Image (cartoon, rainbow, N blue to C red; front, side, top):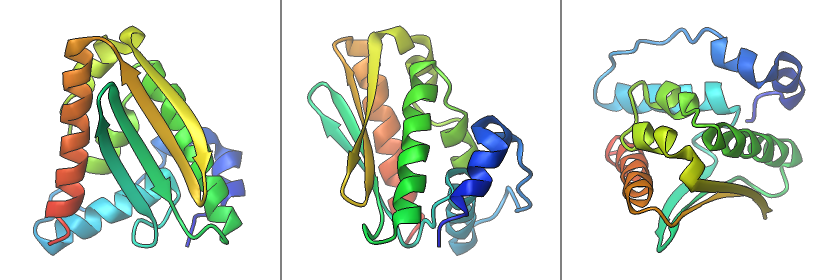
Length: 161
């Protein structure tokens, strides 16, 4: 179930980042995956078990897709709001959300932050949610984007097993 989107809108995106998350930061095994899922839901407002998150490498960057049952309008609205905020934050070199969700510095983000003026982030709605298209013509930024996506795919996949 999605968090109440009106609550997240009321406290604002910046305040949501400061909201306390009472969860062990040093869980292992299945507990680590559960902790990752809980942090994802806390900071994104979307149930991680009923949504699909994809990170796809593309020749000029990547695509982040987050979707949910398209009939759940509240969740779809929450996903679109979240991804719109992500596109804006990343465009400014702010990668706080991925670091909070994964409880670590996410590989590639230091270069992506430093090279933020060489990278374009575009949010677009899709059926059931949205996508953020990340593009660049800078080789160093492209390598960082690929590193970021590889980590995301690995962390979400490996921890699930």
